[in-house]
Image (cartoon, rainbow, N blue to C red; front, side, top):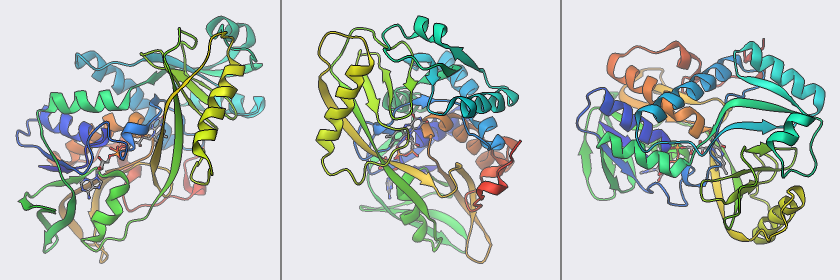
Length: 364
Ligand SMILES: Cc1cc2nc3c(=O)[nH]c(=O)nc-3n(C[C@H](O)[C@H](O)[C@H](O)COP(=O)(O)OP(=O)(O)OC[C@H]3O[C@@H](n4cnc5c(N)ncnc54)[C@H](O)[C@@H]3O)c2cc1C
């Protein structure tokens, strides 16, 4: 089996392939975990179940949240840096509605009152009147988790660019890299934003969007935030090295920022006015990552058809935003489908070439 792309999604496919007895797994990737050209290296790492007005996606995210816990219990060096998160990035009424909707989908979310917030976030200066508390939300270091999954999978990882997918009569026979042709009858594409270019080599037009996300890391600080927090125009969490990882408005696009260094400094200055800490908050470094965004926002996982609608054998695609949240089950259920041909109901609505409009989302 060939896997193209060594981000967290590729790692999950490799891990689950190995768990299912696939003994020869070759991972080909132009960038490796930790490289700044990967989305996985630039992530905030919040694992959560939120998908307002999209029940199908919220259920998938929740299942991932539960499955992450199982993986963490099972894989010795895999862990989370925090559990639980507070969110107040909506007006009170809207936030209450979001909480009710996600509770009806069995998520462990509840309203946190001001006094509870004071208790759990003692360094926060401006306490909002209410917040949503996601009890099972996790923060995961994307690079560490990716490396651990690969390590456990025993796969062979080759740093190389894949130029072409090679197909004969709708059957995949391998890939062409910059250096060689590697033959295999199963190619899994977990190439994030590299997927459209790869698919174009077998005449499949595939559109994806992207936006640029800025995250700022401070030098290590004493414990200030036990839980990740997301307000209207900021999000922040503290990692296991004590660094605050700070972003602006969630999912904001920084591609038009004229002076990214000034913006990074401002994120830190603003954060220092939000937390009651007398020492200096110093910029360590910042990351800029492109989010791999399927056009309708939902993950895309499954087999592909050509422009005539004919099935292509031996090619499987998995691309998504929120990949830190979604990778575990994308990999587990994706590998099940590759090996057995059976598609699990949890991914039923995420076929790669199906684009769903907002109105079509199951709104409950
Ligand atoms: C700023 C930011 C914040 C985020 N925050 C969160 C969050 O809080 N929670 C969450 O769940 N998600 C978050 N995400 C999204 C998440 O990080 C991504 O969805 C996830 O990392 C995607 O993983 P991936 O493996 O699909 O892609 P990538 O990590 O990009 O890996 C794709 C790999 O494919 C390789 N590749 C591409 N083309 C080729 C080719 N032709 N040949 C060989 N190799 C190729 C690349 O080199 C790369 O290594 C965030 C993303 C960003 C940028």
